[in-house]
Figure 1 (spheres, rainbow, N blue to C red):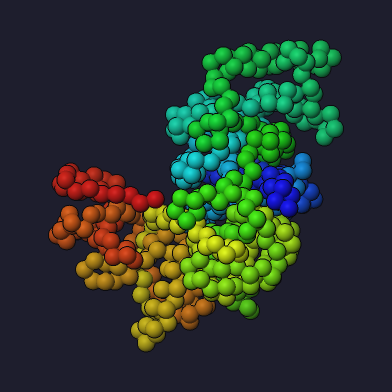
Figure 2 (tube, rainbow, N blue to C red):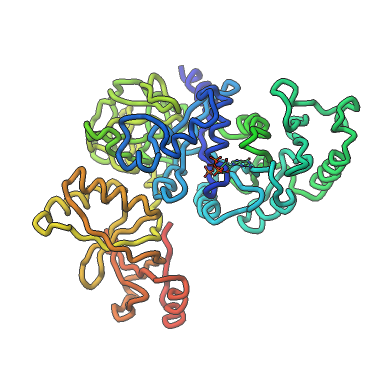
Length: 523
Ligand code: G4P
């Protein structure tokens, strides 16, 4: 039994794609789903992103934005593996959810626009993934356009992100002259613009193409061979241990739009990406992924998917054991037993009932208010508690009040519940106690406003105080006169004082004025 479970766990690959908007995350996701046979037509995921997709039961705000719960987790089979892709919304939808989702994956794929290189959002997301110490794979996209030289792109990984890049394949030409991809890892060449069947040509034992292949005579191919010699001699050496800890990233090149290099990437990815491993629980105990008792943690809660039922879905990452419908679990925070009758596993095309989910899989539990973000659940007798999910420092802030002063009660109730759920961060002005909300992305405010109105019948008034740099200060060192209009003094929900600086300049100014005061950034 235990071995059967281990065999299943070994087939799981759970990852998220991180990228800056427009680098091609949606396009590559779509190609991966095509390889997995989950969708039959390119454009399906894209249509969802732009809202041209008819599904009746999304939360209104999601419909407007074209985000869907079903695309939060996409699952498919490839090469005997079950792949789970967790969506990390970008753009204006960027929120704490995006960061928290990264706590539930075993690897990340970083998609970079090869003409632009590393962009700000990629850097932010990279930072979070790096802290987890999980493998990071890189896909340099849009090779069909003129981009930066591959060597530069690899050097930038080290310069800007501090991670070694190791080439797994190498372009033959680029942009207008793109001819193919030299696949170092699989010892073959992928031709650009060739039919499915004869796209891949094996290399001979010297790493050359057969002479009968016209590309073998192409000067560009000779250039690629020179580059390969160079990177083999002067580049980073492939090091599985460094890859496992996120200190080295395997780099792939391609063009998601023209489905070039994507399968080459996927083939290596499923081999190199880790299956779910053990988790640290109860402080310092190791919980193995094939431990027979079911356990998991809630990393995301999505509300009101169906406005008629006011339901929520708690997304649970399975960490051990096997999930079956009707399972009784204990919620570690309260000790309460809950029967999990109504659970959903996510396929890209539809929601389906879960039959078996093991470590690495994500199940969606219909929730009537039992769960909070970060909750641990377990089925065995022994209590299992996962470490708290990190809180992420908000960057956008709003003052918030109830529109109708007569409805203070529902305002406070809604506010408390949504803050507890982790939907948004709450602060209070140190002097006046006025409420200030903090978020990582604008969408969090919109969802908050929408839910306050729809779930708690409380209309809220919000005024932006814009972008701020939040820094905590030791209460011992605090002197309220340090506060002025450029550094608003507030307290968090645990009453810890912090300054919201207007910008980094204001923070530096403050530090110059009070050199002994220690400011900290939470992550
Ligand atoms: P995102 O999810 O990371 O935001 O990016 P998305 O896949 O939506 O891609 C952003 C734009 O880049 C899209 O063009 C997409 O077609 C294009 N793109 C993605 N991969 C490649 C590639 O390999 N080569 C080229 N040349 N373009 C690529 P768009 O004009 O914004 O949208 P659409 O007109 O295609 O709908």
